[in-house]
Image 1 (cartoon, each protein chain N blue to C red):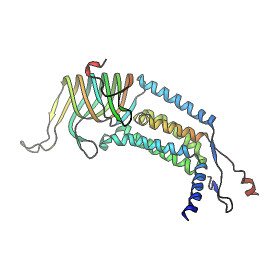
Image 2 (cartoon, one colour):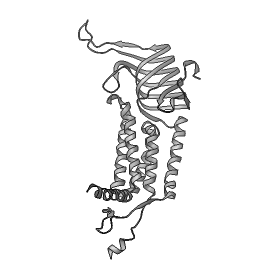
Image 3 (cartoon, chains in turn purple, orange):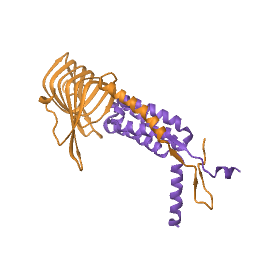
Image 4 (cartoon, each protein chain N blue to C red):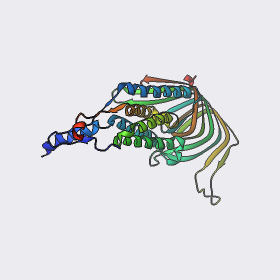
Amino acid sequence: MTTAMRPEWRSGWRGWRRGRPFAAGLLLGLGGLELICVSWVGLGFLRFTGTAGAASWGLGALFVVAGVTTWRNPALRYFSGVLAAVLSLVSLVAANLGGLLLGFLLTAVGSALALAWVPQQAPSTREEEA
Amino acid sequence: MIVGLIVIDDDVPMRTYGGRTSRRRFALALTPLLVGASVLLAGSAAGAVSVAFAGEVPVTVHAARISGSGVSASPAASGRGGLLPALATRVEQATVEDACVTSTARLPVVGAVTAVVRIERASATGLTVEAGKATAGSVKLSGAEFSTPRMSLDRPTGLFTVGARKVSGRDVVTQPHAFTAGTITSRGVAVEMRRGEGGCGPGTTR
């Protein structure tokens, strides 16, 4: 049974992945977590957080939200993409040089991928509608 | 809202409304971002843009000259779980000149790699440094104070605090565990990566 389930599960996963800007959401989420991690590792104590620590948490959370939005609702990819693009530039100044540049690169590429994603109409749509 | 991007039929295993990434759009979206980032980085290197930092970096800092105002220092514990004893120093306004920051990372295949950052001049506001070790060639304090909270004459109740209105020092070497700064503005930054260990002693700073 498991061998019969596996291809189905795999094709379902592939379909889910292809039906949305998957790489964009993944990179945005990873970039957001990276921003948080860079700040988290160095915190030691919360009282030493400072503005950059707070900005890392805030921006990181927003990137994760933008990534999840592109996955859950690809129609909002322009909104989340533009938001993430602007925030990635803000993170350069406000959050440890954009998570030591790695977080910036991840979120910049992720936002560009979200903006560049074009949905394709399935050829069967008309048949089903008819 | 798009719901049901995947259509499953009984006879056909899967039919998806796929998507593709337009390379032209990707380039159009990424180019202004990278241009903006270059401008921001160039601006911060030139001192026009302040960059906020908070974090823990295993580095050694050599500075030919430092000066600060509104300094207070007290013993603390640094690291997760308070494992490392450290001196937590709070400086309202700090300026460092001819500094050299080295950090050595031991990578599995490559071996030791040392990053050397030379900074001509950097100033920071709201700087908090937790350092385990600091040495200085000479230190000048003005308006210094030392206080120990006490309940009675012979029993101190808390940790001591050393403070000063103005501090200046020469040939300072410190190994901060963690630091936080409101803003850091630097001028004349040069980054160099080297194979092997080592770094810059006080004599090699410009």
